[in-house]
Image (cartoon, rainbow, N blue to C red; front, top):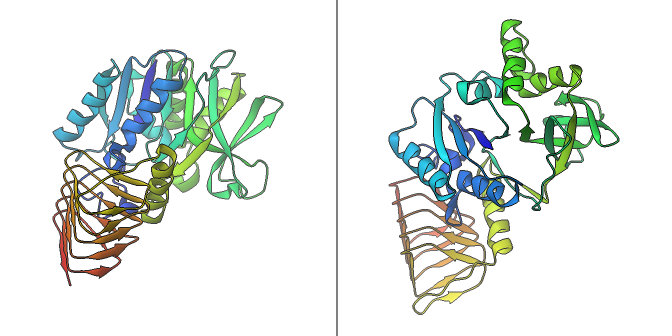
Length: 330
């Protein structure tokens, strides 16, 4: 089983935190988004993941590949890398996986997190599309069903034809068949929303060929696409995983995640605070805040804030959103 993960985007809506680190590698309570995705599929699929195929941006450095290789190695899988030089749509991103598009696999886009129950049924279907009910599907692709089978896939419908939103996760029994359908889009210059090559259009071709499509559900679908969504998702995971922490003379209001080597001294921390590895919080009052690796906060009161890697906040009161290696003082 292959895991195909397009992740070439720079995540502009979560800047400044994605200036250096690609969004899928930003940590959420100790694990990057992409690691959480790999962990989830490793725990719910009926067959083990053998290969992780990551479609990267052209400016992603060797540290990114090293991190992704480590994630795969943990699960006994081999890491493969491809590059998407230009953003020409979701179908184009998948096509960049090239020769890795063979055999069975899961295609999943690394911009949301999710929970699902184990024992996913992949039988009697050429494609399984994961869906989630939404009240307004106009911003999503949707699946139109008759019984338990999908009969149409429509990208961002402007009339209400289904409330089952496609969440960017697909099982494909034969990736070569999908590759051929995407090539048909290229050869005939069939573009969709945004004048880009859309993966839903490639799947729609397979539907018209008589391929059997079914749906699967997630129990939670968590957006990480912008700063407020990343904060909300972090709060959800903090509560869902039951994180708590201790510090020297610190009052802690769970949930609080404290990463390896991170320290609390004095002050009051929580609720809904994620403090990544190596960070230090001293004599401060912190709530509803994400503190990235090796940040330093002292003598401050912060709420609804994000503090980047190796950033420093001193004697400041209020709300901040600062990137890596930045400094704020009161």
